[in-house]
Structure formats: C-alpha cells, structure tokens
Length: 295
Image 1: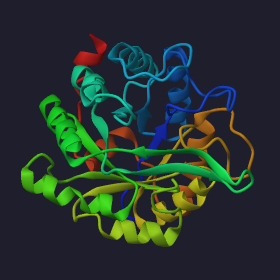
Image 2 (image 1 turned 90 degrees about the vertical axis):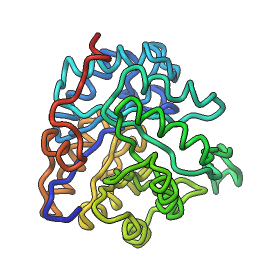
Image 3 (image 1 turned 90 degrees about the horizontal axis):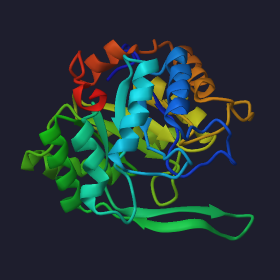
C-alpha cells in the first residue's frame, strides 16, 4: 500500500463490551445497527466490523443474531463490506466461527496470537480488568481452515510485532495465502503501545503486496489515524474502540467518528475509498455473495 492509494475506513460499530450507559449511541437491535452504519457509510466508511448483540445488549456469537443485524445493515447500506469478529474468551473454537461458516461474510477477523490483555488505572492503583487472551497456533489454523472452506478472507489482527511475523508458518502450511490483510492494533496493555514510531516499525514488517490498517483505542486513535494515513495504511474507528472526538466531546453516532477520520485522511492528501475501490484494494470479489445472509 502507498499514500497514492485511497484509504479504507472501517467502522467498528459496537464491540462486545461497551454499553449504552457508557455511550447512548452503541447499537443493540438490528434496526439500531442499520441506522448507525448508514451514518457511517454517509461519512465515508466502506467496511463495517461487527460484534453481534442480542436486542437487550448482551454480546452473542449466535448466527441468528449476526444474520438479523447484517440484514438490517444491508437494507440501509447494500454496498458496505461486511467483516465479522471471531474474538472471544472461554468459548469453543467451533462456536467462535459458526457465524462465519454459516453466513459467509466477505472478511473474518482473526486474532494472531496469545497475550496478556489488561487495563490499568493509575488512579485506583489496580487493574480494571486483566486476563489472558489465548489464541494458540492450532486454534488459528482451525479458524483459517474454516474461513477457507467458506470462502471468507481472513483479516489478521495483530497486537504486537511478533503477531505479524507469525503468518510465516501459516503461509508455509498453505492455510494462509497472500495478499493478506492485516489490522495493526495499538494501545491495549499487553500489546504494543500507541505511538507513531511503533506503527511505522510494525507496518514495516508487513509482507510485500499485503494491505494493512491501524486500530487504536481511546483518544490515541486520532493521532494514530493521522500516522496511518501518512504511512499509506488504512484506518479503523468506531464505538468499539473510542467514544470521543478529537475535541474531547462524546459522539452522538459512529458517523461522527468516521467523519473525523475522513477529515484526517484528507489532511494527509489521500482520498477516502468507496466500497468498490476498497474491494479492489483488499483483493475481494467485486460482487459479494450475500446469498447465505439474505436467505
């Protein structure tokens, strides 16, 4: 990827943890998801990253909820690229991938390594949460085999430099093929911290002819979005990662986050990719197969 190519903006619409008490714009129902992604698409997003919720807000991996949410999104934004999460703690691998194999989105996120995953509060002198996010190679291979059978492109989510380089044995085994899409995640305690220098190094080890984008949590998202756009990478924003605008004001919708990201991208002299161009850049079929999710 280069700075001469348009930047793909992904909207991570809800995440699996945050709730309406923290930010009222977080969607729970399919209708709310559809309206939020309409706002994001209007502002410049070409891909949506989905963690499903039950209508009461509880996180879920059940395919029927992913299906209802995706149908509502496509009714509002039929050209958006659909990207499903597979991240979860404490679930059998077959449950973490069932919605992928059954509904066949264009992209499935794939965590590329195990790590401490924590948040520390200096004020409290303690951890807000602290657990081990386990993603062993045998589990990664299982997810890749299932995605390959379903015709779903994996998006390798990497929380540190070693996670990027972990693709090498998977390529040799034939379960992962180039060009690969990477998401380089910064700012999670236990992974790489959110600095422009770290992003420059991490992106430098992405294999040739592959694509990459930046994910960063909280308000560091804005500095990192500028760095990613300047380095030729893509950008992800959304209520999964951050509730606040660069001004510090809480947003009223995902669309406001995407609009701010689009402004940052254009300030680096780059265009914002439309979905058709994003599919070209990501080596996706020009016409996605929606038959499973719309059935």
